[in-house]
Length: 483
Image (cartoon, rainbow, N blue to C red):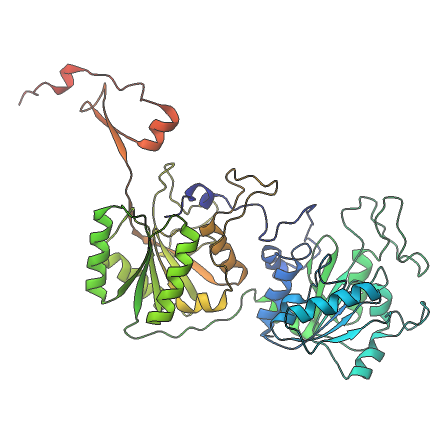
């Protein structure tokens, strides 16, 4: 089992891609229906990749054309569009620096990208403020390439390019003046100022407010913002983003096929093994068992084998120190099978390290039988097979804190990273509040100076705090009581 119960209680503060220099960015000027995207941030540069992917999922855009102006060399400055390019999107990549362009071409070739359109000319405003410049509209017409997604990072000229552009991509990611600059300008810089640096050393660019105003005047809605980028969608598409979750309608399966996936040490609790045996007999399911020292590796390999060998509808996971009944599993299986949007469901289980449930948030309502949650555990959990088809590998991997240490709670253990991946892919995860399972613990039995003269202390408490202060032998507590 994964030893990460402490980190279940508090969401790690880092993002899946470790981002140095991240500063808080207020989303108050983003309309409320779109603020859910703030939780979808991961990847280059300050979470824009994750937000963009969530937007495309909501729009149902699995493929299309993507344009990136200021593509860089693909290594020191990775493409923001790289994940889309590798997923088969046709791309137009613009980079006027010839050395960077050569590296970019080499990088894309190494990654297997063969049909990208490469442009090494400068793109600029219709005013042709830079010698030899061409407009983006001219590029689109020349190449017969009309992008669905446009990404602009062109050394401060983004505002002027967009102001003169006539084509209307569905989604535009555009850089603005760095919001971490406390002297962030409120006025639009002149053409002559673009590309230069302010006294604070930040590159002078159009401020967020001016860029947002421009995009709104051109029929776009601001749906996301980061420290240096804004993401905009055409007004007519904005309602699809406001729904906030990729629509899934998984069909109810009659007599669903299940497989039990276990990661266990070589020596484990017989009580759990007996319950697994009873479960398999009652449900008629197989077991795929991984036994090794590395939980993340063994869980991944066992999950892969379970899917390839048995093609199950649902995968059932259980830690080797859990206590449950077949009825518990049946109730959870019915719940997930009857919810066309649910990807995973877990039971209520107490932590071994404190007196709280593993999944508990003071601000969450647990009064209904089923509650959507951000995290689960693997004490007793059921996951649809399609989840593993949608979420790319690695599924289970650990991340240290931003400073490289493994101190809790700001690390992300392998199981927690899995739940964060599901959240970022907008997969609904729930807790069945009416299914409560047990958590076996190793306890020390002591005498006590009160009650029946006996007390149990979890071994973790003994290791942390030593022998209980009231572990005292009081003979009279053991004397026969009068009738």
